[in-house]
Image: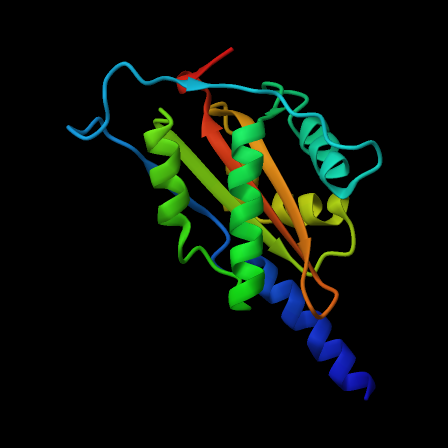
Length: 173
């Protein structure tokens, strides 16, 4: 019985780092009107919430680079992605294309996604990302100054944490 719990815990840690990072750069296409620009809308997460703790941890990690702000639309997209993964019972970047298409339609030039699964706290999820070189690179990237955060608990009581990043060059305040 103890071995099962240890193996299950290792599985959660391994899942947290498999296929977590994806980034797509959008190129100007004939379908995207040239006059559409992404408009930033800041969102404030409830005090003490898991999302607020993740944002505070991101800010602390990025103290030497540029600040990161939470964006309403990116948060909605992250929430959709987290619920989609929960419903499908699949933690992966499969299906992110739809979210990136919505971003392109909204005027974003580049977006990124990172996912964590099974961490007990928001700070733990950020620590896990920072321990992984590709995820730390994306979090610390000068390219992204805006993000959306979603946290959903699955039927097994494990957290699915999703971050959607948006290219700062495309955001207008």
